[in-house]
Amino acid sequence: MKTIVSTIALSVAMMGAAGATAQTAIKATIPAADTVMLSDRVEGDYQVRRYLIRSMSDVDYSVLYRISVAKLNAALKGNAQALSELNSFVEELMQDTTRRVCEVIITGYASPDGSVAYNEKLAAQRANDFKAYVDGKYNFSKHYNVTVKSVAEDWKTTHAAIASSSVPDRAMVLGIVDGTQPPMAKEQDLKRNPAVWNYLAEEILPPMRRVEVMIGYATDRVVEERTLIKKPAPVPKPAAPAQDYVVVEEDVNGVIVEMPDKGEVRKAVREETHAVKKDSKAAVRQAKRDARKAAKIARAQEKAAKKIARKEAKAAKKAARATGKTYKELEKM
Image 1 (cartoon, rainbow, N blue to C red):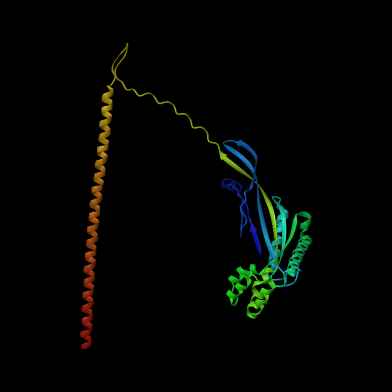
Image 2 (cartoon, rainbow, N blue to C red):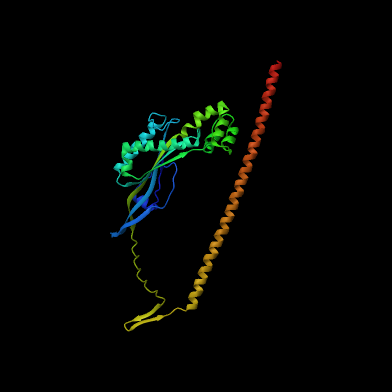
């Protein structure tokens, strides 16, 4: 089983510029990416900024172990695919210079059946066994910071799997696993019902006997952001002053003008504005009248259509009755 967690946090502009693609995530967290500006320059009409984006990601793989066994079996159900995917990822990781491994955490687990002390020891042995496997194949401990952990599962961790399962007497089983009894007492109560215990032993407990490896790594990407520099708009030339005068006489000695009266100008403007508003109101009134006429015509057409439909339906019923009468008369003959 593999889980990929991507944690790339870039602005939309940067993502578009970089053309980066993120891995498909089953579960993801998004911490802030570490962003450093590398350069800031002007190229022609563009301002060009280059950034180093360092984002954190991690990937998880899980392999299963047999009951009471701490030795990896590559042929066990699902292990071949998980190990193949792990191998492909490590090969890509070693060839990708943009990714840098920060940590590797290997966690061994044991199912809750059996004593707590035994399960704790078994979980630790499984974790160390898988560490030896990756060290022998990839030299993980030589190249990376590898941490080994172990977890002995308790019966309460089976609640979710049991609640969604078809185990017999499910309510009773959940009552036992959620109870306050010691782990061995819970196991004994569950074993009293052979059908229940067989189901748990085959469906619920095997996936809990596992080792999970988490590889956390940083991805360094250099992205370039190009922004068009806005040039100042050209300043419009001043318009030529309006000639609010009238030439009344011109001769070789100069020009004589007569200035218009300002009061008359304002009056003319008011009259023109009033005429425009009057024409606008008249157009609106005419449009409303036309709309009312159109609606009236539409209603009349609809009413006529309904009347014709009723007549046709009535005629059809009459014809049907006449046909039925004819059939009855023929039957009597």
